[in-house]
Image 1 (cartoon, rainbow, N blue to C red):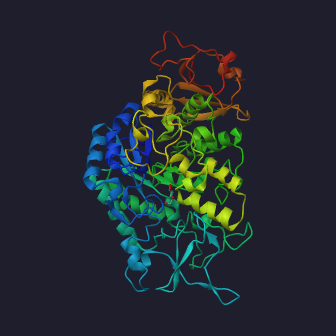
Image 2: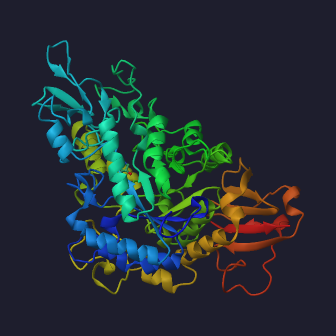
Image 3: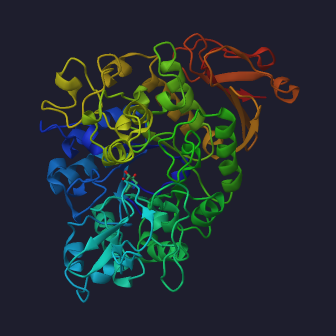
Length: 588
Ligand code: NOJ
């Protein structure tokens, strides 16, 4: 059992910290562990139960820590193991659990396993990674074994002279994929997990966990990816997800490690379908508590997850509602959802799904939180989301630090000759750096209190207005709305556990979701538009008396708003939602 006693992950709210952008205590421009410790009161005031901490392990930082060179050490830019222990103790003292990032689909090429593995074919570590012989082309030249393109561009195959083979890397060439077919590798991973759990951490967020078993031909031969565009390289992601041994590996991990501790587990699962969601998170047979699926993240790009992230298309609210409800229906009683609109890989939700202009930024940021937290599942808040932070539009590629964004620019503009203005626009919309600008704490301090040095990535130009100090001081801020939302969820199980049902599914601007649980019946209405909208609810819903519990407009206060006086009755029959208005209503 954890130091904090037993725990129901279904009732929790999780807050994600991206350490290099959170708070810098030592003035080197990079956020660190002591910086996190200094800001735990902010998280406690918000009311979150769990922190998911993106990687802080030793790493050459090719992908900001998702390339680990020592799974048991802290990267010096983030601090020391003593800083880590202190941070963990301070979290636990506030009743906050800590979930670490477990990145074991791949390691860094600077991990000792790999520096050994690449020396010779008979090195004891060689089989920790995935190697293939070259193909010989018609011209007699060496070619990569398949046409798969890596997530960060280029081939997934990198030549290794010493062994005369290619190694596989689904991400950057400095992130070689680990060979989970090898039981010795699996045992090493389980040992790493025990190391952190024995220290007292409360669980893991597992990076691209459905890529650990590769869906390759039974004889190990590799199919080429389907050809969907000109040139040799083709989107290769699907060639590496959801292999036949995934459940087996995860059940083994549960048996060997997780069953011996009280843990929270969430697996990141690109391309996961609802069937895989059920298989992996079923309360009786699943291996994980919950999954991050990606279907709702793929609705505003032309090609979806496979290769299409940068080709923008407007979001249709009906698609978003349909996709979320499909997961709600499939996992109700048969699994568990993670609810997220943002993380360190995704743009800011207020820019993507809301309206980030001055008239509607605050209301639409509150609406998105209300809408998300009103689904069945465990909500995740990504740092800065509770401040309503927006995307950043850097003026040129030189300002971007993210490897995915920089590689995309190089491939699209320099190699394929695409229009630089169009590519820059897609970076403005989708670059991972949108989520990585440093957190502005206090505009009265240098660099808004993020760092006394030069921040590794520029602060958002909004920082004088959009910052934690101002949010905490303003009772109508996004921050206080999230705080009320979290409290409401804690006090009323219907919000976390209730069955959900959509009304007005075909309405292009309104979402109306009913939640039902043990005699409680709630309705959550959201207007995803800048126009007032009459809400045409069926009489089955409008007949009974209704009480407003939480709203996002100062002029309409609900019962959980500390400044609400008197009854909060609301007439659903005549309801007209103001622009970007969101309402949580108790019926009957
Ligand atoms: C998913 C992580 O969230 C992302 O940041 C990272 O680049 C890839 N996995 C590779 O580890």
